[in-house]
Length: 264
Image 1 (cartoon, rainbow, N blue to C red):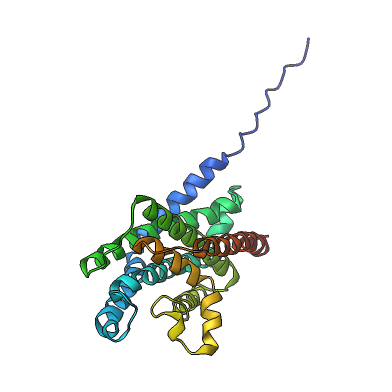
Image 2: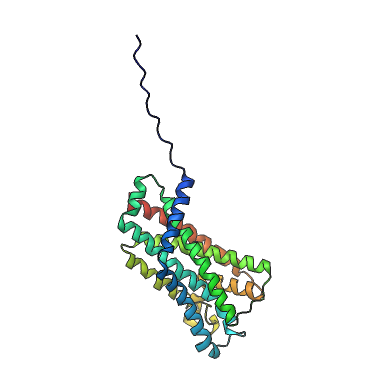
C-alpha cells in the first residue's frame, strides 16, 4: 500500500504593497483627525500673523501694492511649514512608542509607513491653505490670475509642501523625542522672515540681502506672487522647482537611511 499523502499548507501570499500604502495613509489621516488641537494651532498661527502684519504693520510698509496682496504668498508658505512640523512630531512619536516596530513585524514596508505620514501632511496642508486663502479674500486679497496661473501656483505650492513633508519626516527620524522634533517648528517659522515674504529684499541690510535672495523660500514666494498677481515670472519658477526637487530628493534619501538605522 502506498503511504498517504500529506497535504502541506501553502504559504500565505505576500501582502500587497498597495494595500500597505493605503492602510498606512488611512491610519495617518485618522491620527490627524484625532489631534484637532495641533491642526488648529498650525492653522491659527499663520492667520494670526497675516492679520498682525496687515493691520498693525502693513500701513508702514511700502510694497507698491496693497500689503495684504503682497504678504499672502509668504503666509501660505508659513502655513505649510507649521503644518509639516506636525509630521516630524508624529513620526518621532511612532518611533518612540514602538508602533513602527509592530508594523515592521507584519512586513509593512518602511516606504509605506513614511508615505502615510507624508500624504496626511499634504492633506492637512491643502485644507489649511484653503482656509488661509478664504481669510485672505475676506480681508482684501485680490489676485489677478487666470486658470493657468492658479494651476501653476498650486503645482509649485504642492511641490513645496511635498518637499517640506519629507523633510519633516527625516527630522522626526533624526530626533530622539517628539519634543525635539517640535523644534522643527522654530526652524520653518524663522526661515520665511529673511526672505521676500513680508518685506522686499532690497529694504533689508546689505549683509543679509545675499542670503535672502538665494535661500529656497524666496524663489517659491516670488513665483507665487508673480503668478497670482499677473506679474512677469522671470526665472523664479525654475529656481523654485530646482530647489524643491533637490531638497525633496535629499529628504527622501535621508529618510530611508535614517529609517533603516533606527529600525534595523
